Image (cartoon, rainbow, N blue to C red; front, side):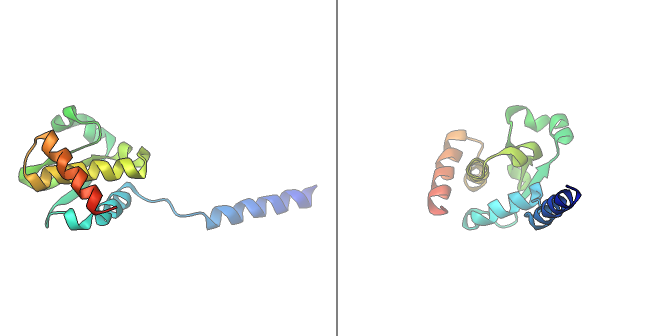
Length: 123
């Protein structure tokens, strides 16, 4: 019985050691942005904002996922969203924010149009 337990523990440790490393929210965003690379305006930054900062920020009252400050060339993405969103949802959100960047506007319908084009051109 003791031998079986030792073998089982060794197997669990072996599996844990070979599991894929955890991806940080920043790395996940960067990877997603890179997958849409042709659409990213030069000099634009994507910043993952932790939950405490998100809740304190006056700009986040209209968004649960992300927002862009066009005059500062930056998009802020909520860390808890990055951690929980499916890949296609995160790509869609980032493409939508890129839409705002590319049109230089805050109009949601125009950003949605750009989002659709970005996703179509970067499957």
